[in-house]
Image 1 (cartoon, rainbow over the protein chains, first blue to last red):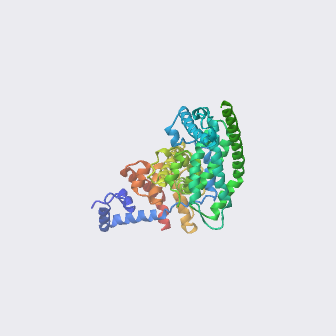
Image 2 (spheres, chains in turn yellow, blue):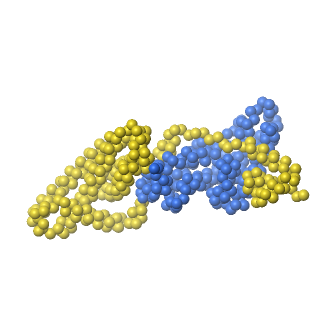
Image 3 (tube, each protein chain N blue to C red):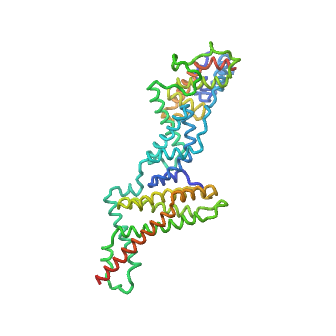
Length: 256
Length: 194
């Protein structure tokens, strides 16, 4: 009788032999192969899984902090769609024109409807338009942060509504941050960067927020003074918007 | 409801780098377990966790959202570990971390128990663990990883093959070669312990 080779016996131990049934049949009839199989099995049973030491509780945090600065910026799907700075500028101008039309519609005096609108749109400053949008974004973000800070943290909370709002804000936040960086407004860009991290945390957090989760997010907001910064920068942005609107209105009146 | 890994990946791909943190929070510990089992060294394992996530982040665009993220990440971790062990092996200066009284003259040679203390004085399981660790260091990186996946993690031959990009027969052969080498080193201990 031809004996099994070592490979057949080892692989049979794991159930991986090419013909396990035939190997088993052979062993039932061959004492020598059975004995060899038992020796292999006995050794392998003594090789226990390596005991893994449990890393420190802050392991995830530590890993992230070490990793974060090494991660290159990802280009968003929008970035892939509009890859070049030139195309970004075109898209920005189009958005600016649309928002300008909206803003002009809201603030243009009703009595002066005889005045032609197109020149106002054509003269709208894109930076002004972005500022209006950023001011609005900060206001909405502030409302969300205030709600988070004031919500009852004693029992698990349904955070699905806040999460949905955070997700909406997060998408816009990214665009405004890119825009602020491009326009050379580091103060707003930095704030939006901080705000984005907290929004991402809320958006990706559990739908049922435990008191512990809530405490963690509040701690983050407080430690970075985020709510205060959002209010200050938001107020500054709104002042700038009002100032520019007044100048624009004065210019328009002069033209009339 | 918890946000799925795929949804978080989509968010990162949309430009939200910070969202990647959630994936690190969810998976870094299990990846550490994998890299530690394969390297036997805490510092190396921690470094490999970071390398794994860095590689994953850079390759995120190639992740298919319908796939299982943890499986994808596991494969990256194993291959990063394989690269790491291969480089370390090439340098030929490695010594496995878990060594009791290594003999500097003998380098990476395994000491057999014939001239050592008698079995009655040994704590056999502890001794065996130590010898297993030393013997594992003698395996090639592929053998070591294939054996760890099959024997210690209970992964199938197919999974080993897919992860290490080996065909079924090569994956089986890697496991067999690992066991054969371990037997050569450990049979004496195993018989003492029996």
